Amino acid sequence: MENVDARTGLSSDREQAGLRDYIRIARFDHMTKHVFIVPGVILALLLRPESAAGAATSLFWANLLIGFVSAIFVASANYVINEWLDRDFDRFHPEKSQRAAVQREMSPLIVIAEYLLFLALGLALAAQVNSTFFFAALLLAISGITYNVNPIRTKDRMYVDVLSESLNNPIRLLMGWAIVDASSLPPASLFLAFWFGGAFLMNSKRLAEYRDIVASDGVEILGRYRRSFRYYTESRLSVANMVYALSCAFFMAIFLIKYRIEYVILFPCIVALFAVYYTLALTPDSVARKPERLYSSTPVIATSAVTLAVFLLATFLSIPQLEELTSQKFIALPFAEAAE
Image (cartoon, rainbow, N blue to C red):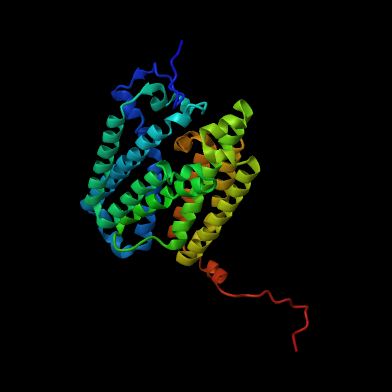
């Protein structure tokens, strides 16, 4: 008969974790999420030409590599405490119940040492880039603590869970920006657009989870897995998705018009990306539940490729006619009587 720990509900007969299991909880396979550093680099090169002059130097490429490795280590530190602190709840999730922290008996001392090691490595590397990048890396580390650790543990609070988790997106944007220009910050409109865009992605993930798990295991098991799901409903998640998408579009429009008017031709592509991803969230057992594997979704990759092509076109092509969008103009009706 299987022995069960009365506090955690986990089997006390689990095998002892090995080196491979401790590496697994660092989730190095999630490093694809650091792709959000790239837009920060590219936009800083375009919008801060005085700082972009050093992009051809070996120092820039060294900082770029060090910066990516730093972000990977800090994020892995966050994943370590995430898997350890969530092990009592992940056992109720149909997929996360297979995680190493649930399936194996792990030493708290080794887990803490692993967390501190990855965090120290990440912050030490961040300090080698510049002070602004170090600040961004520190923010990433703090966000991992507030998201996972009691008494704050924002992941258990409805809506706050999405907004706090998605804050990692603009932080990664800042990391990319700082690699190019440590003397300034990205525009606030761009920062907010990335934040709400990330919120749309994270909320879509929850919507997909809600639909799939409720259909297969019922809403009660979902509430055991994550406390915030006790208050979420499909309609609340759907409305939140609309709010996040509209907020992202609003701030993105401000950025596009303010910093390069040609970028407004990107807007249909951005709308298409939202539509494609929302469709995935409504599709059973889709990749929307695992954003780190979006590269396996043909619709997402195809739409992203078109968006990138249009972005490059808008970057190097001037369209003076679009300037009229920034000034007040009224269409005169030739058959109407003039005002007296």
